[in-house]
Length: 614
Image 1 (tube, one colour):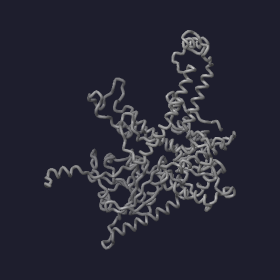
Image 2: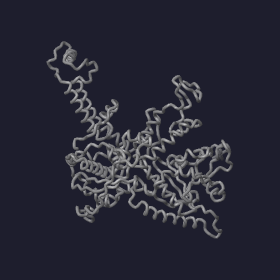
Image 3: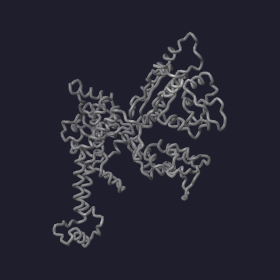
Image 4: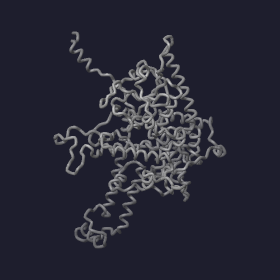
């Protein structure tokens, strides 16, 4: 084989590129702790061993902090953890926490990191999330002009409880700073302390959400009395953190997860809807709101289990308990959850119950448990309350009692007023352009007509074309806020990243489920169409609602005025039949998407709640 020429060799080398490190997923915070001594260690000391010993000390301190501050805390998804890792020859402590929809979990992690940096002065902490340097995002209004997102990596650190920013070597007005690597940052921290910027104003903005910590940690949780099967109560008493996994299974359910709930046979359930007890359950606030806010049709096996009473509190406890129990049922039966550590733990506990190694608690045992029930006022926010709080009118005057419906959370009022103040400041800043709003994407450089447009071009209606509304981006943001997946392919045909094999299998199974139900849906559609046509609801040429119109319509249908075989239905009968069919279709959707829900959405009508058992 002939040797490769220098030209071919250069081309071959150019085809190889370093594999980029995966980006941090959404809803995750990634953090690393480095030991960087302020003074160099003696040459006789093994630096690697010294670094590892110091990091082990930090791990111990971390365990103590978690034990003291988070004794009864419940994480929405994953907890704070630190592991010793070695990357490119650098030993450090690393952790990643998926906080899900609970933003407060992310700030609990930041608080723990800041406290660790206070207790170990030679420990330097770096924390980023899916948005990048989120601490700089919090302090965006106070940052120097040179600190752009493109150069922020490896410049933002937490040390001794303070926010530290590495300044550029030659700081000149109007000039962007250079990018620096992790090795550069560590070298600057150790040898060039004059380049370390500690700004009180920037730090206060960056750590603003930590102003009420550690007191606020307990306020991130909500305790409520719920009526659940004794077996579920036993599991939650063993480990209260199980509630988060069950709530997520309920909140993110799909037709496959709902399969075990369709059975009318109580014996087929892991958690049978019987032997109910009322206990206090501790939720994350986000998790409780997710349970409380979702409409969920009562499964067949639970139809007669909810109390028939006018006492709203009793019914609400039973309804929340039903949702919690269904969440546990779906969690333990759904194939995609079988490899989760939480599921394996719960199955081992249930096996001990079946073998007699563990016993269900008696009523006497449950009577000794905590019966805490927190106020739900923080859930009740109307538009009028929101408007009043934004205007700073929520507080009572001269010692008067606060008005009914006012915010139950003082932090919410303060945060909302701060957001509005920052937004007004941005709008009043003449030097700020629309580029300051990060959610607005750059438009495609290729226009449909191929004509070049000026950057500041304004159309005939006075609308700034570059700052016009982006429907796709707004839709994506709303989906993320509502907990819906935002990475699905859009109607325009744009494809997102390829799904992992487990996700592909899930999608294929859901497609198979849809095909199995297709014939039933088509049959139901034919029957509904036939009934609606028979009543005349689908006739776009109907003339009116009086008797003459009905007669004219009957004559038009018969062709000769003979209407002996046509049912003379009253309008009320037509409306009742239509509403009955629509409600039955909604009930059959089991809270998922379907034709009836889509029909109501197109008519801008809300989906009615199922209040039959209240």
